[in-house]
Image (cartoon, rainbow, N blue to C red):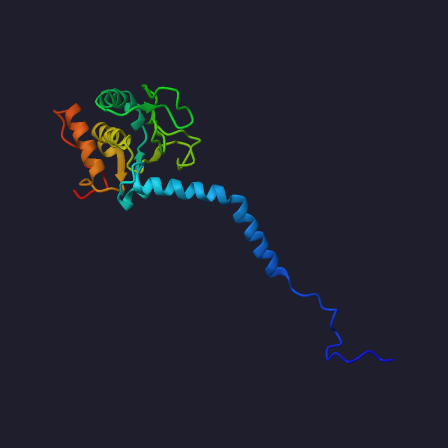
Length: 210
């Protein structure tokens, strides 16, 4: 006896396409697996924007960043800049550490390296000259560096040290910041620099209006 005609002789021979279901399943597994990690990132982003005390910060703090490019031979003046950094740090009221990876070590202000970060509210380490293995360094000469501070406390010292670099190196240093000079962070740096070196004129960064 013939089997009843179902109207589709291929019924049962064509496998249903479940690829989309598999993709959604993998997506759900990813979210479940990394849910805690994603939540941690969200909390970190909120702290960056609103601050530890929940006070709103400028949107510029998301990318609050300073950079420099030093011409050949410019790092020979690192000892003089390090001496300035010691005096500037002495006038700061916040604690410093060597780096985010070495929070128990003291900052370094030496003739060949200046390295510090803010204790308790750290972001990028400030290293001058930058580590040649640092991903932010554009070439093996290590003449370019960047420090993102998100306008945290230690940003005042980072900015003041950059003013010292510009003072000592002049046209040998191309120093920039993505925050304008009238921003609160730079006003604090100006005050620190002027209080420490009252006889000096305030340098102008290269990407600011002259």
